Length: 241
Ligand code: GLP
Image (cartoon, rainbow, N blue to C red; front, side, top):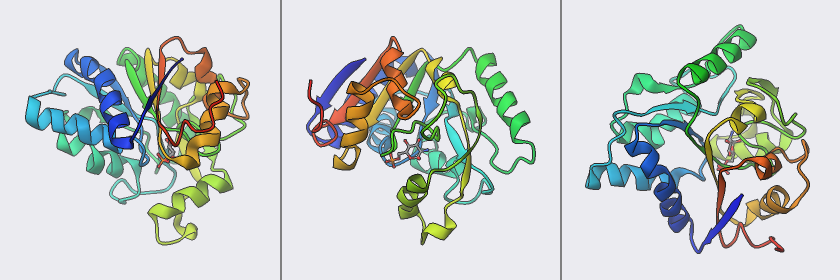
């Protein structure tokens, strides 16, 4: 994996946007992450759309994950979040922004159908990823099998606590999610993992320099042939090499 360090989160977003832009021009299938980390990248891509005519009209997109039990309209659903933070501000066809249905009463069938839809689109060309403070990618909580597929998962208590900042209190955070598997994510052609802030420094060290282990699902990216990890100085602060 390539490691890039930039001074600020804004510059991290610009660097990530530089990687993604040629894929957009080629009409790629984009893998989109939610969470606060990718927002500077989305803001920069939306700016390039607005000011430089970068068009997403030929792109389609797949989200990584979704909370179980939330209505699409719920502002905390990832369906609503990705639209609010990114895709409503570009010219992608909304019907081509696909995500897992958190209200399904048959999670296994939904997971299978999602894998089929990704495959039918020719796979994800470029996947944007964040990382949880406990080393999770999407909602693949430790321990997650490194060849896992899309499935329903119980959220780790630390993830529930981390994500409580988006809600009034921890009680409102869903306890389960549907997520692309680690193995599913590894099939993306190119991966851009973004991490910013001191609270990600330990996870970044484990994912870049630690053993490849289900205990840190993000560490599997060491085995991915085209992954770039883009960090700000705080997130890179625990790297030794
Ligand atoms: C959630 C998402 C992940 C994301 C992580 C980190 O758990 N499912 O995809 O990477 O949060 O979020 P943030 O970028 O807000 O720190």
